[in-house]
Amino acid sequence: MSVDTLTIPTQRVAKSRISELDYNNIEFGKIFSDHMLVADFRDGAWQTPEIVPYGNMPLSPATSALHYGQSIFEGMKAYRSAEGEILLFRPYDNFKRLNISAQRMCMPEIPEEIFMQGLEQLIRLDAAWVPPTAGCALYLRPFMFATDDFIGVRPSSNYRFAVFTCPVGAYYGQPLNVAIEPNYVRSAEGGAGFAKAAGNYGAALLPARKMQERGYHQLIWTDACEHKYIEESGTMNVMFVIDNVLVTPAAGTTILDGITRKSVLQLARDMGIKVEERKVAVEEVITAQKAGKLQEAFGTGTAATIAQIASIHYQDTDYELPPIESRRVSNNVAAALDRIKTGQDTDPYNWVHKI
Ligand code: COI
Image (cartoon, rainbow, N blue to C red; front, side, top):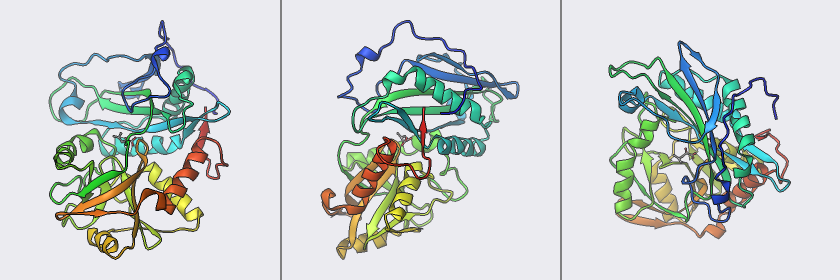
């Protein structure tokens, strides 16, 4: 826990909605905690943040984020330990990544004090919303958007940073059937694929829906030039175990530098598993499956955690993967990660930030 140097004016709700929360039945992304943090950037500076009741924000129809997409966000989780402590996972990594996204989208960077102390004070106030239930967490959604009411295309002068939180369960309820995307492109070299920018997700909706209409849960993006190399999956980075080696596309400028991705790779290395971050050709994965060498495939993400992939569709064929129970690498790493996040194991890299 850090010392508060920032006193955040707080307007509390008259009556908490916490009694409406069923801790044993939490759907992802539908229930919002009592309060949110709001900070505005105007006259070239961040103003004092405030904590206010969760609620709507009035916006001008000309709000520039709505037209030109200067809008970025993060996803993070806080867990409840068996001792009742609240443990936030790798918040400084989200802080850094939000500012990397801000730079790319020509937005002001958020100061560490507002981000970290804002999160801490918000979580402390809504502590009751951090579920004690296994497999659940408090999801935090920091975001920033351009608020100029002006319809010319230029970087906004005014911005809003806000954080709201929601108790969540699993994002994906079951192992995924995914399909390799042969036509659409998520991002290209020189683009903004590495930024957690709202537009990256908006542009992915149509291709994802088309895949869903064909019966697949998610798609796997391929590179913009040849559709030959694997990039990432819908809301996740993607990894494979081929012949006992954990292989994943290298984090360059076209894919999101996932925090769960980094954590999984580190823990796998610590377990003595060989890890390769490099280009991964679709053909390599399919050839490995045909030869019986594709042992595992899974996605990694804050919301998704570790999401198992049951089958991969490519060029008219569904390639089935080995049963989930047989997946030594992802199951062991997922369990180790979960133990660190929930304070059951020592935290050798100081990933866990106590609130
Ligand atoms: C996350 O994993 O936190 C994400 O931001 C993905 C998503 C829910 C859009």
